[in-house]
Image 1 (cartoon, each protein chain N blue to C red):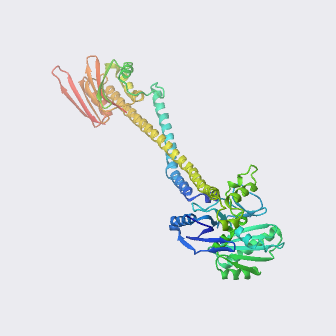
Image 2: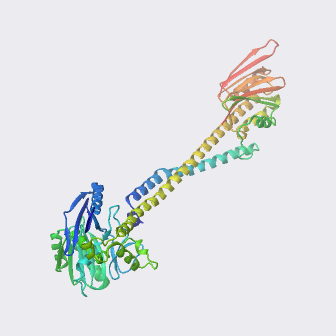
Image 3: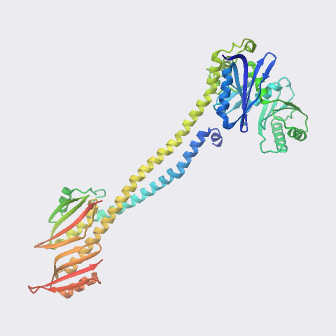
Length: 410
Length: 142
């Protein structure tokens, strides 16, 4: 029998390690358990552990974080991409959900987390919000009305100075389009990086307010209330569910299905998440695996096409080579026959009226002729003209006739 | 396009790379070879057509060897003709021509491999018999 408490299971991948944590959600916040770490070679063990926790806690959400660099905050819905609503008319989009086959029911963007952390501080003044997650900077310019612009900057391989320079360039780029500089900067870091902070402060010449928290705690916080879970990435197909294709329908479906509206009941009565909850969310996110399978099947098309083309041309080429070889042999045979005919013609012309054939053997390498001769010298001369190294001999016969024989190599 | 490739899964990328390797290592060389062979064959056909036209044979008239039709064709040029099968697609030919008409046999011999897919595999023997010359040779189907 599983535990009836509402639990948030959080995981993410940093470099070659998967980090897993779970926390029991209460009225007064969450109580986090020990963090577990798995090397990427232990992926199966890691997935098994998540399933074990899911089985152990019947009321749970499995939450992860998108560390994709290709995500952006936009003001309009893009149904072709995976998207999550941050707040009114502010959505975070990325091309697809990239969780692979790791069980996940809620999937957050660092931008959504940043907004959640600072939303109460935002006012009419422009604030630059910087989040440092897994050595990547998620930057956005925001007021309480709107997220105006966002950037992601990878810091791997860069010095602190280079990172600060890129943040400054982002600010300059934003200034070029809006003629505004951020009034102040807030920074949320999930790794300790005092040197980066120091350099950023120096380079930007601005006071940066710092907040530090772990990714797990931020995710437990995001999963703690249904209102916040609406900032999760929603699978792109879900966002198309409504007849009018509006985000509203999709969001309603997701929020109603995936997370109970009354988290209080969740925590206390532990039974308000119905069975359809996890089924819907899992099927929504399971779609990613189906999509991947579909993509792999699609990728087979060029392979099959290439193999088909190769097989076709190999077969045709083999037929053609057979045909060419046949024609070559035919041409050779015809040439050989023409030479034999020419030799025969020569021999018979040489004999003319000076001799009469008894027998002859003619091949492409030799000539042997035997017959009766009347004009010895003219015949010898004629044959020697054609084959000057031939062997000509004569033999008197009993009937006063003379027999000749001629042999020569060709 | 590069952005599209980046989005592909690892398996899709591997399949894509395998497709490219097969394309460049096998398909394209085979295609090039095929088109070269097409040209070679065209040249051969032109050459054979040129030779065939000398003997009044239409292009594509080359037949597979058949004893009956061979004898029928041969009798247009020589007095007598007979064929004896030796097996293994080889045949002994016995032909008779009138003494003064050895030129007819020569023309027949020159065009033999243009009419039938055969080659002469033995020396040709000529023997005088009264007013005729008996000619023997062995041919084999190509």
